[in-house]
Image 1: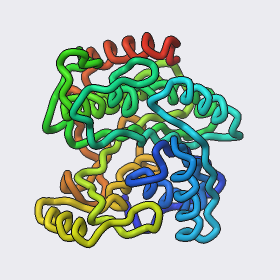
Image 2 (image 1 turned 90 degrees about the vertical axis):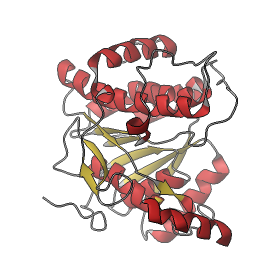
Image 3 (image 1 turned 90 degrees about the horizontal axis):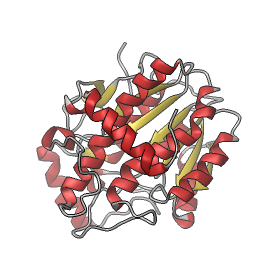
Image 4 (image 1 turned 180 degrees about the vertical axis):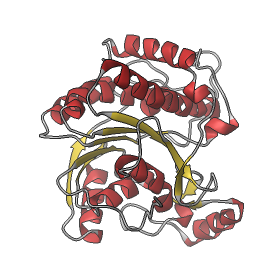
Length: 307
């Protein structure tokens, strides 16, 4: 069946959690899910920005059911605290692993736990959050975990042997590795859920194409773009860019399409932009050997088994 991202099926009675929900793709993912009648938990690290996102969704989606919670995915203590709260929810239909650092720093930084910051933020915290909320997902029929990947996985490759980049740090290498890790994790999670007989929990992966702020609608307090940036980003439409509201379409489809299945990979039809479609993932993303090593290392770093 065709999928219309502008006419989403009702999700009334369901609950979704979106990390990094106060800006960019996370905000528009949350707004679109709220428009379906679902309750959406905005998991954000900044209280002021979380409040702004909450107010924006309520003003743009009449009757929206939204709440907020504090979560810094780069901090494993914060992740564990958030996971404890999420386990107390009556149901958890979707965990959207969206938060991340998009513009890497020139110099290597580390998280409070001593891990390379981009790796910690984009991947490791999400690994720990999914592990910590698995019991809530398992007791919710048809629940899904959606990991946010990136088309950079097609432009750069890595076997993920050097996750910390202690002596080989490069910002874009760190970003690419973190997104490849998210894709590897998303597909491996679904395989392990099936093998463990974990009820109906499914894991899917989505990527937003080339989605930029200057092509995104103005939302006061969320996306406020100068005229100069509108012009500069507008030129990038010629090379396939789209707005972040459209980039969120792939994530939303992965989260709620009744015909989607665990292990599916969604992205824009024309790679960088367009309506969300099922797509093939890179060989590395589905490599079981790479996945096994990543999984073992991640469990060691969070100091607990996932399943």
